[in-house]
Each structure stands twice: as C-alpha cells, then as structure tokens.
Amino acid sequence: MPDIKIQMTDHNADQCRCENCIMRGLISSYVPEEDNDVLCRIKRQKAFKKGEIIVKQGEPIVDFFYIKSGIVKLSATTESQRTHIISIAKPHDYISLLTVFHGKNYAYTMTAIEYTEICIFPLNLIIDMAMRYGNLAIGLLKKSSKTSDDIIDRFVQNNSRNLRGRIALTLLDFSKEIYKSRIFEMPISRKEIAELIGMTTENVIRILSEFRKEEIIRIEGKEIEILDFDRLQMISDRG
Image (cartoon, rainbow, N blue to C red; front, side, top):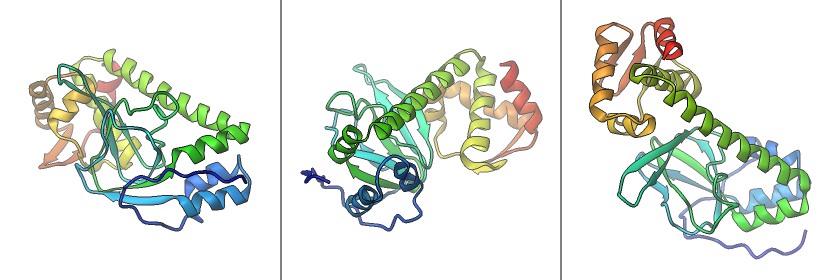
C-alpha cells in the first residue's frame, strides 16, 4: 500500500478495537485485509452527548463518519435562518455520504440526539482506497444512492399524508425502524418533529394530544408507548 498523507483533525477521539465492527465487515468485502488493518489503526472513535454537534453546516470536509451507536439528526439552515431536519440517522449509517464526495464543505449540520458513538476515518484515505478498488467505489456509490433514495421516499411519503398521517408515520418510524419497541423515549422535541415533517409545533402538540385522548398512544414526559399499533398504522396508511 503506498504512503498516504493522513489529514488529522482536532477531534478528541480515542482509538478502539474493531475486529467485530460491522463497517469492517462491509469494507472487507471490497479491499484486502491489510487495508482493513490500516483503517482500524487510523480510525478514531468519539462519543457525543445528547445535543452535541458533530460537525456544523459550512465546516470543511476532512473526515468520513460512521455511526457505531446512537442517533444523529441531519439538519440544514437557510439564509432566512429557518432550520429543516433532513433525516434521522441510526446505527451503522454512513452519515457523511451525502456530501463528502461533492464540494469542500458540509451542506448540513450533524447533531447527536442521544448519546452517540462515531467512528472517524480520514476522508483522503477512503478516497484513495475507492480509487484503487473499483468495487469499493461502487459499494460507496450504492450506499450513497440508497441514502438519497430513502430521503426522497420519506419526503414523498410525508407530503402525501395529512397532518395526522405524518405524525403516525413518524411515531411508527421511531418504533419500528429505530428503537424496535412499542415503548421508547422520543429523542427530539415537538419543535424538531415539526421541522422534520413540515408542520407547526402547535399542530404537532395538538395531534399528539388527540392520539393520547383516543388511547392510541400513552405519553409520559418524553416516553411514548404505542397502545394501538394497528390503528396507528391505519392512520399512517390512509394518510
């Protein structure tokens, strides 16, 4: 493997073991074992508290990020200072794929919305490997396309529903896709839910209250329990 100049950032991150890492398993199908070992030696891992910013919109792109555990909010702020949540990323997502191969600065902010561990790789090393191993480049393109498709699909699904349908879809996503449980703590505020699905905060509060009164969900502080899963699914489907 040729010598590569690694551009390190000032993230206060620690080395970690990665023999059983899912990302290692994904990369290993595209590159030789020796390059997997290089990634493991160079990789850094950093923990972020809830609400802590991982990178800000507009910052220079120098790293490649992978979520080891936790949940991350991707958001963008317009010139008029309106914030829009692009998506919610979960463990094993490559949260930098949407922007690292295009442009020099991040187009969105990444924020941990619960305790989150991120694996950090120097971007120039990933690019070098992608240039040397065509299958890795294709694999990264596929993952980037899948991420884009998921965001587009979510946008279409959300905008084809009425307000109750949007809230139902969001609750089901957190229950089925992220926490895989009927009981979970909502990691984002009512205001952030509104930013995610294009509603006002007042409407989010009103519809959650309606669902509670109709005994579709139980709300206790930040904890939500889906009491009538079938009915919530029906509201989402009929939109």
